[in-house]
Image 1 (tube, protein in one colour):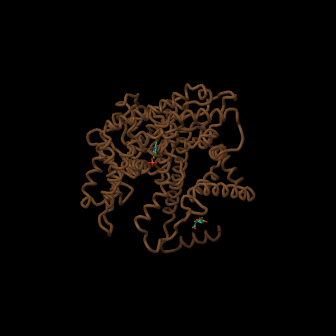
Image 2 (cartoon, rainbow, N blue to C red):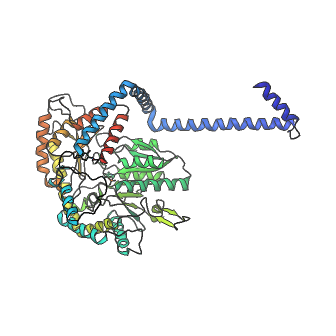
Image 3 (cartoon, rainbow, N blue to C red):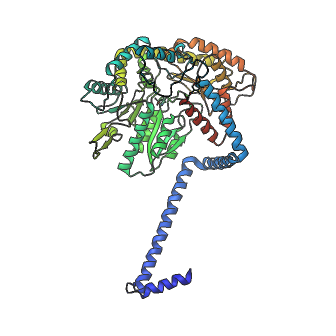
Length: 564
Ligand SMILES: *Cc1c(COP(=O)(O)O)cnc(C)c1O
Ligand SMILES: *[C@@H]1O[C@H](CO)[C@@H](O)[C@H](O)[C@H]1NC(C)=O
């Protein structure tokens, strides 16, 4: 290389365009200086990153993370070994097939339709088939056997919602001039929820298709705002590890780094010192749950608010689950935490009208302290050949029928209706909590997680308890309850179970407690045996450092949803 390049140099030097030697030297110096500067910037950037990481997670935490990363990587290599691969494949395929036989009906008498009927069915035939589909064997939510999931407000209300659908079936709020009634109802739903959460004058909101969309919208808005106002190009959010997965989804969708903060016993609320340590100039949003899904615990919102105000950051409070129950705790005579816009640092709140608002599924709202904050989630395209396009959120066309269903629900229940539901639901949750804490057959084997204030009660094994006859495998308990027709939620890290009390569950809470007592009795002292679904999934998955097998299983599950 050397002779060639020196020849090149001399050629350049002799050319008519040659730069005089002194200038060349200066240029070289400049180039060197520039290179050193770039190197310095590069080093600074990585020093800063390393520093932030060390500060955020601590020396020990960083080492633990590194060790976990290495272990995970080694495990990934192990999984790639051909014989391991084929074994995993076989196991995953079998598990997915098992799922399929459970979820997808087959056998004689099952007719599945995979292409259009050449000639349309009569209304009568469609109705008959719909009846059959509705009556397919299922976990009996009607008898209160399902935790969460079905936030039913009673048959009369369901009839009213159906009427609202019928009246507004074709409506689409994207055309407010065509459907002025839907526009009015939508604005009123948002206004009523704003007032319920004590938004100040000027508060604003948007209705969405569900909690996930409400959360995605709020996170997107925070990202856009930070980019425009502070030039944040590598945004980060700080999440309680118990915050809903929708925030992590937002992180993946919108390219935002997610920091998870522990929520340690005994309070199981987000650890403020950890949040503080993770704050840096890339932070775009703080998050608290009221309450969270896994444990039903309300984070310390006033403390998060103080932190948000001090660092001039937005704070989102996830009231998706709490929705109208947390809002009515005080008026229903229960102890209430601080969670709404009365806490000064709270800038946005997600509220699922389709959970404890009892509206039909497909309804939620995201609220902001001001219209200016809301505007960050708007999508506007001024130069599309299809015309100027503007939508408040992710969806384009939206179901006016659902908005009408939501409006009808809120108007029909009113404050009085929600208070009476709150008394019943939160009352039942307290009854369950009380049973776990005091029942002679439960109190030695189970521990309530934290102090539940709303409708979710979560429990686990006693911490640091000696291995004795009282100890039970929580996943065996979950499977035992499944055998008795219950569908409760299994939790991981730590193993546990939660019950989200709904109106149907509240009506069956006595049976729930007695079945739980019976199942815990059966499981006591039994450490092994044939493993049920929950035990198999979480028992194995929990121990794996690399979750790729779990991913494959979950992917197989999603595939199953579309099998005919
Ligand atoms: C249900 C829930 C959500 C998300 O709601 P979807 O309507 O299922 O999208 C968000 N946060 C919490 C705490 C929830 O329980
Ligand atoms: C339809 O149902 C039958 C069982 O009745 C099953 O064998 C078949 O695989 C199913 N799917 C399709 C696409 O036909």
